[in-house]
Length: 332
Ligand code: SF4
Ligand code: MG
Image 1 (tube, protein in one colour):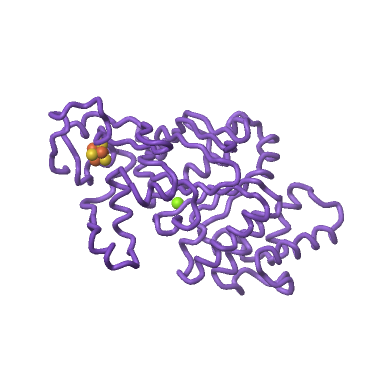
Image 2: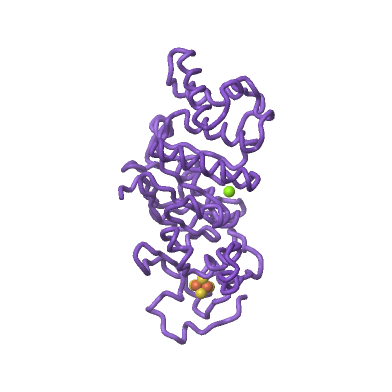
């Protein structure tokens, strides 16, 4: 497996004024292999969109590195970053908000090609627009229509065509199906899968629940309050989740098989998601963790590989702690 993206100890803080700091992304490490789909999952506000935008170079990092194909993204100057964006593009959650309502489909899809000066001849550019529309399953006769004339699913297809316009290798899809009807979600996922096969694309696929990435992701990273808490192969994550937060997320997904459903315990998380401006001490999940122990409020669990390609940050899997420290306490 060839690594195309390496994110190393990436941290992103936002200064909120009056000395307050929002810790959006905290010391996150993962890599994405060429041609795979890496799923990044967690509740809204957990920092997954911030990771996407920081990798794109739209935000400066606070510390750590994001390295794409050997190039450190945050060491690029503006001109180099501009060129780099031909290789990495983004698809957004809300096609309504991300498409200019006053631009026709043709203008929306042509814009990146124009900005990057891809074609000298307008006719060549229009041919490419037609080609892209076909690739995303839209009718070329729609080229002069406006975004509001389309359904949510069609609008997302327009967003995908725009992202493909520069022929990128890597696409960060930030909740591309979350705003769509369930019936349409599968169609868009299938389209992305087909495009991946045809073009050899690599995806960083951001979603807020595990059900959405189950069919699509090769590996999955689970995030909570700016921290990555577990990372492994998709199958391994579903069959053998280790982190209490991952277990809770999985327990919320309905299983079609009633026998399985009976065996499984539904874990309801108590309490509110804490603020990333004032995160809990020790383990960030401890205020809602059903397994919280004494040590969890004092010591931040280290990110460690506990099985082959299976990483977790949780004291339950830390062999260096003695049993006394592992005494269970009620979440606070
Ligand atoms: Fe729960 Fe402690 Fe593990 Fe955090 S470190 S997930 S609080 S058991
Ligand atoms: Mg988001």
